Structures are given as structure tokens and as C-alpha cells.
Amino acid sequence: MRDVRIIDHPLIQHKLTIMRDRATSTASFRRLLQEISHLLCYELTRDLELEMVPIITPVSMMMAPRLAGKKLVFASVLRAGDGLLQGMLDLVPSARVAHIGLYRDPETLQPVSYYFKSPEDLDDRLVVIVDPMLATGHSAAAAVTTMKAHGAQRLRFLSLLAAPEGLRNFHDVHPDVPVYVAAVDEKLNEHGYIVPGLGDAGDRLFGTK
Ligand code: URA
Image (cartoon, rainbow, N blue to C red):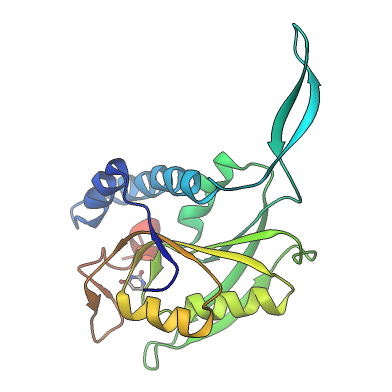
């Protein structure tokens, strides 16, 4: 497997099990995804660069670390990406936000673009694309292609669940982009759903089915 980083903290695994259960309510599903996004964000940002700056505490002056460089960009793949976005912003409130509107054509399973809005100066920012389900990998790859076309050069992809074939498809197109994910499931079914998975993340998040 290429650059796939599995973040399998016990709390993530426990919460993911509850999310997978079809009896879990919409409200619980949404809250659990937000909680997991805190833990995923914590790991994804572990190696961010710091710079030392002078500050004055109530007691003395000191050199203290703070995040270096330009603000991060979190790019949410609509609509399920929004389930991860808020938790990411809880931890990095100064991050800029992009939205990428893609839907999967139900027959070809290929992504179709319907919306894009992003900060403009992407070239020297770390861009983290978030989408809870990396299934066929086609939408994930299209989202990265879109961000690269708008100038992004340093990218990471953050997901909750992935299918092995989706990861292969994704890295065939973007071998330079690491994927951070809580679990890699068994396979895709004939409808492009992750098995065993958790069903349609968007529907479960927003209660639309
Ligand atoms: N999208 C989902 O929401 N669920 C899947 O299993 C695959 C794609």
C-alpha cells in the first residue's frame, strides 16, 4: 500500500463501531463523527512546523512555539465532508475553508462537479481535503485534481473509512498525496458502497433517508 496512514486509536475504533451500527441515530452519528474528527485532526497535524516567537507571560519573557507558515486550508467534499469539517475547525479555528461539490453518477460511479469555492492563494498552504468515505477513490482523486488545478501543492486527504480498491485508484492518480484514515474495510460492493462500511455517510449525517 502506498502512503496510507491508519489512525486506529482505541477511542476512534470504539466510536466508529457505534457509527457503523445501523441502529445509531442521526444525532449520535453526527456527534460521533465530530468527536472522531478531533482525534483524526490531532494525528494529521502532529508534524506541523513550529516557529519560536517572543511573548511576555505574567511572570517573564519567553520564546514560545507557535504554528509556522500560512493558515491551513480545509477543503470539504460536499456534503459528507462537512461532517468532518466542524471538528477540524474546532482544533484549528484559524484555518481557511474550501468547498468542493461533487456527486457520484449512480451508473458510472464517476464524480461530477457542481460547485467549487476556495481561498485563492493555495500554493504555499497545507491543504487538507476531508471526506469521510473514500470508496471508489474517483471523487477523492477528482477533489485533489481540482485543488491542484487551483494551485495547491501540499495536500493531505483525510477520511474515516476507505476501500482497498479506492486507495489504489486514488494513489494511481495522486501518488504524492498521503491518505489519513481510521480504517480500511474489506471491499466495495457492486453499487460502490464500502463493505461492511456504515452506509451512506451523507444520509446518515443529515437524516435524509
Ligand atoms: N459513500 C458513502 O457514503 N458510503 C459508501 O459506502 C461509499 C460512498
